[in-house]
Length: 285
Length: 275
Image (cartoon, each protein chain N blue to C red):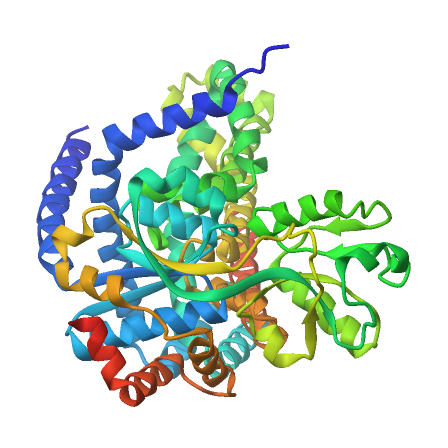
């Protein structure tokens, strides 16, 4: 019993001293979460590089699942992220956390959701899928059930009355794996897709037309920060608020650098900073 | 039929705990993060070759099996060669802390459950929930309490891996032959004497089997834990599958398997030996 009390006291002393030093350290440390998507990784590394190389902060970036990323910003566990897909993909997360986060607006537009097929597939519109259901093996290859893209895809199944096909749930990884297999065998396949995504650089793909607009309009990638960041770290807030790509092509360019074998994302981010000084200085001002 | 608002009740409870107790868990997280970082840094101080030699030596000293020590040597060299050394150290640290915590909590609970039918009846359904609830369900709510990263991962791993330690400890003690227990009673031994001198030693092989399972379950959690930022070998797997880099996914997966085999064989041997 005595030992236990002593341990409790020791532990509380430890907690107090360490949380004290923790505070002191936290001053110059920024934590960002991201999802291991190429676009997210490219944006996050550029922000990290600007904060470290130009502003003297120490930045920790954490690759996590999308739900974890939103939850962490909402609880203030990380300072922010540059991977909020709105208005459709992350709509569910945004709606549940909107009172506990601050939306700093888009860093890039021109992002898109849709259904994609290899370019050798001879149809061009979602409306034609039903007639060729058998060639597609009666399935549309989807991603994780939590993604907004899947909710929209379910809607599209109804809108286009695709009763001869099934929307298969999986994950981003299983989707790209199915796509890769089908392309290797020269088979027909339709996948739920979004861009920017590396699969468009790797294979020759095309989006199917969506005349009913079931899969949503243009998507924007937003910067989302925790409440109170403006007060705690005005400089960081200012940078995150100003950070934006000039256009989707600029982001695609950095993503292409990251796709090179043995390339280092942080080095690529530094290269971007060096080659676009004026734009980067504009973010810091 | 009115819908039972089970989800709302649970969410309300979680929010209540977050508002009232998260300052404690967050302080705990800060301390744990330092402890983990300290352990990792200490292990990383050793040059890999020295660590590998020491590990192989330790395995030989514990098990006296030449084949297993050679496997340890070769397996860890392979991990080092695949440039997964830091990730492996990080995973081993995480699994060690999670397993020790699970055992420190689980074995005493198992003993109490073995000695009291009432406790046993209360514990069983909780164990069922702990083992079968998909880990992701409590990973996300754990973030407000423990933040992203290793501490939340350890929390999830402990919950997931503790049940076998409890169950098998309980089972081991219950399986001690009745006549032996009666014999001990007849000689007038106290409850503690009976437990320490008879029941626990007799139950050791079963308890060690539970320890073994706990370690294996903890290792199987590393990929799920990576989804909330635990990094390590699980992080490498998680990244590779998200990017369809099957080669590096398998490399990191093989790393996990190597660590698992070494730990499993050593623990199995220790369990069999004590009998």
